[in-house]
Length: 354
Image (cartoon, rainbow, N blue to C red; front, side, top):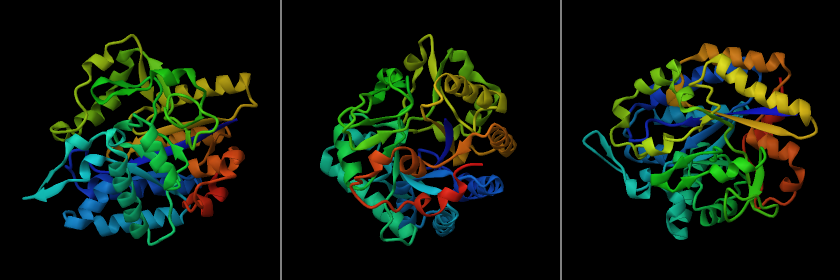
């Protein structure tokens, strides 16, 4: 059985450039209309530290509309999840420019007390933004896809009631950040973990539902659509926290993420067809397929519409991460560290398949 999970990183550019209206509010409004048409849910990974800082400084007049949009999305049955760019935590705004703290770009590598401080502040912000003091994010994704080193980060997330991480992309490697997800290639489509996100641990407090990837020749990463979107934000690359990765690309195969913003319909369909082929061999195994997108990359809404139609015609359900763990991993759900209060738990069942 296959289910697709659409996840959207909801944010401006990583170095603080760009407007909320252009890069988050308006594209997400259009995306939500499409998902409403198909009656399927979305997981919105809201970059809470960034939004909290923008609200604190009132540096972008659209922040109130952003918070209203998050409340509306949740009320419509979409899951609001936690996404963190920790280099925003010590940020300050001066003369129209954000000055960010790149020394904290890997939250997982910071002392446990600092991780707790950042996560607690982010969850507190989302509770205020959603006007719900009981809100607990069900799912998490790290900035720059970081979940290494794992142990302290996993403990803090678990204490805050988070059940699922979706930071891993199998085969990923970024030397300058200490990110290495190549060992995860040996794992199945999902696994529990504790001290090392690459190592399955049936007693672990968190479940890894990785971003779906396929190991492809490097040239497959040079598609016209992908490069066109990349060229759309040349200025945002200046001062961005991700270092140059030429050494990381110098290998026979590179992990291509299932990116519903940057891929064409034939590319998306081909990758899902690979899972369908495997499903015909092992239909008894549940196969969650996480697709990633970014609000700032939302420019091709026609492809998203046709991809959702393609999935519907093949009876492939679309669900949230919260619904996934509730409906397909009941033993994991049986002893949650905190009550689950994510938006999907209220409204998503009616939208879980199409």
